Image (cartoon, rainbow, N blue to C red; front, side, top):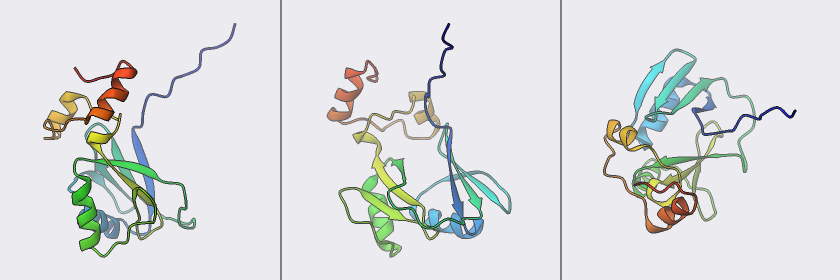
Length: 149
């Protein structure tokens, strides 16, 4: 009898290696409003409701190229402006990608435009109950039987 495989259902967190925790918190604080879940001299945890980003001291590898993660935000244009105000260049291409000072590549994704959906009680707890999906995202979700009701 074949054993059952576990099904991947989502992400709990993403870990980014950085050079210095205080510098990383200051860098990301210029771009995003966030709550710190916890920190030490070697780690910091940025709360994303029911998920988090872990910052870990000790980046040793070269800068990322295509490897990246998509960070979902409530206001993509606000990030675009914050990047410009901070003098941080966006990367060429059709998406809003940038590199942090340690070589982590991040793509900014607007919540309204994608299938990724926070549960209504999580959005409410984050003070983001007003967020909604656009028609294309609702269509994709509907086709999978996952449309918000």
